[in-house]
Amino acid sequence: MKIETSELKDARDRLMRVQGQIGGIVKMIDEGRDCTDLLNQLAAANTALTRAGFTIISTGMKHCGSDAEGTANRKALEKAFMALA
Image (tube, rainbow, N blue to C red; front, side):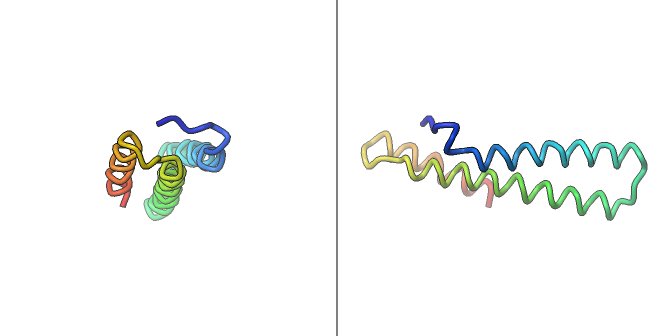
């Protein structure tokens, strides 16, 4: 199933922020920062990634039809959803 990029703008924006967070985490490691600070940043990045995934799945579910292809798409999205949960 293909989704218009405009419909995934929120997820894309979130992923761009996560990309910056990951760069910051790598820099923190290189600087020898406190492990608690690192773990807090990792948790924030993980949450943002999960939310982006849920946004993508939710948008995909809106596009699933009631035909055989839509049913197959829905099952694939449900499997992806459970992998995130």
